[in-house]
Amino acid sequence: MSDDERNFPETIVQENYVTFQHEFIEFLVAQLIDFRKIFNGDLDELLIFIFISRYYLREERGRQQEQDQDVLGAVPPTLSRISELTGIPRETVRRKLLALQKRGLLEKVEQDKWQVALRNQQPIIRADYEQFWQREMRRLVKLVRALAPYI
Image (cartoon, rainbow, N blue to C red; front, top):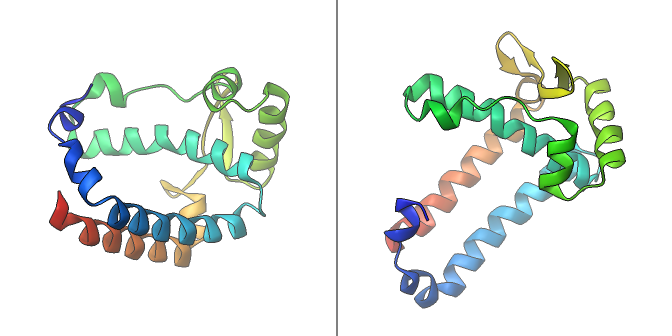
């Protein structure tokens, strides 16, 4: 259990369940609507892309904060690891990785390791879907502000 989990009283969520659920669902629905457009309604592609994006973000965050290097310096995931942790069948993961690679969103590095494709040191998806990311940041700020009084 992390320090954040130990320091978070369960009563906060229990007492404010409706507020927490409402704000989270509002955020999630809007995100999924945008993601559906980007990933052509393919939830498996979305999940695989997000799973791989975590490694890029950990690395970037590590460069910015220069702490927790043992956790943040994780290597890009393999097809087998993606399948194992997401529960998506291996063959489906393989097909989705190739589709994401063809779209230019992911690239294969080393032997069977995958990472977010970059252009000018920035994820291609961020550059190609700038309006989406701006909406996402506004939504995220709105969610944090709505829940901040309770935390």
